[in-house]
Length: 429
Image (cartoon, rainbow, N blue to C red; front, side, top):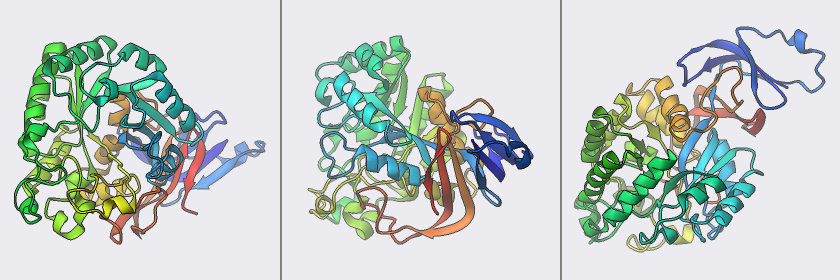
């Protein structure tokens, strides 16, 4: 058994908080929570492990609904083992792996491979199923078959579903299965070169870039389709103020529309390209300060209900290419929580409890995952951290990759322990 004593417990699911001890059973379930659990009463247990969390906050382990572990097919960038280690170091106890792998997650065998490999990591690794075969937008996958194989949502992340009639059928199928479709909303019709916002940042590199209508047009269309089909949608890694407003209005009207924001989109603008080069290249691109603030306000009022990293590892050699040729994306699992503290909590946009909800409970609720709460009878998936401590982002990560624009920056919030199913999967000791 595991006893966590002297901690300040925050449960983002119920909103309850206070000084408490937590007792975790051998099967990884929270057995008891109360102000004081007498260690002497447990002295007869030979296998009792004790963590003294004095001065620390104990909360639900983080849950990321959007990561790329590149496994199978591109494991030189990342694999499920190293990706999970990066997640655990960042306080995550659960992740959902995207399906732009090689082969794609459009068949049960690939899903089963990823799930089986994930079992060895210590954290909970979930898989999506693709919406279309090969993510080519031409033929729908067998959603019931992928659901049976373990898919928790459906997405062609990295590509939008352009054909409207195909998207409509996909939404109708997902509605019948009571599952969510998660959408990458970038219409290639409005993109000359991806990864950079149209305007001054692109022009300085002699590029045209990605117009904001690439996102706006797809979000507008897919909200309409989802309403007609009665389907639940997640709009991924939102980047424009107009899309935030479209989602806000749809939610007010009762549509089943959800959205995720990435730490880089609520932290950086397209001016970061001049400083960080390809480390500021991502899809959708960083946009303007007004967009960044719209995303923050969307997180504040619940229009955007989740924070997801879009953890996207690439090799040093790939990111060293010319801007136009380099791949898009950055890693994020090990810096996300601290960026949330620095950019959202410290300035007063979100309370700490609200940040914890958007990084754990909200994702668990939407995708019907265990975790995201600290309560008796619930899985002991926990993060223990020191909110007041500082750390400097190193040039080496638990991830295989180092493609982060935040290296060398001082961050608030040091994660001391990550506990999944009652087992310590990361400790800073």
